[in-house]
Length: 342
Ligand code: CUA
Image (cartoon, rainbow, N blue to C red; front, side):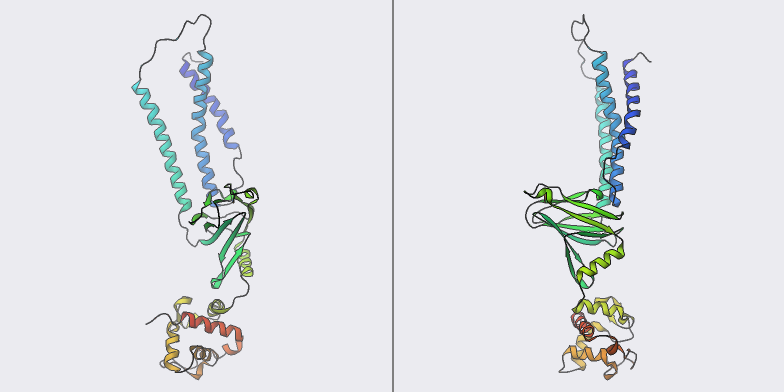
């Protein structure tokens, strides 16, 4: 063992670190990881442990060693000579902590920035807090709205939560996803996560919000994408009106031949449906646009827009589609086919 107290303290510190650091890293600090950001956050936490445990242990070693080794003994008459200033030591103890803390802050900032940035194809879920329950709002196909008190999420799909409150401040927290965000009256706060583990987890309100705060919990189910879609459609109920019309437009191959911005269709074989309402006014004077459009679907050869071939439009939609489906298609075309002037 070296004689110098400084060398001894360093050796004791190194031994204590070698024992305590593995212990600190092997402790299960957090619940299960169920989102992509959970992995990033837990790694950040491990790095913080790796940096801070040796420093804490070394400081404690120096303190304990000094208390024992340099304690007052019988016959000690007082303090030694006072020490005045040590520029080199002061620079060292300012510069090293500064470098450590600023590098950790930079790493944490990069991690947070990565978690919070907009992801491709993210789904939006509106979260509303109120004393004392959570509710979730989704947009299903055809623009239908789904409201639920249970949170369902498809696995591996990025989600952006838009968080509001109807009354006081609440805080939206799913421990297995890490991160949480306050719900603040008057503003919308955001929170992003990509669930990556199937399962059932708890949503917790983590801001004291009144007598029922501790009961303000709900459940999140992370499910396969197909299960999620089936759930969402079931909640939305059967489609009607223009929403159903949009679905039928896609399902029946209308986009193959027609242009219609609202359906993302760019076909050029048949008339441009972005101007179908104008065409109706032009070719079917005195008749409502709905009559013109219905006739064009059910008996297309009764009138063909000049410049387009006869009998190219299938003659069978009148038999294939129910009356309700045809009405929905007509509504969709009137709603979306008259807005754009060309
Ligand atoms: Cu809401 Cu606590």
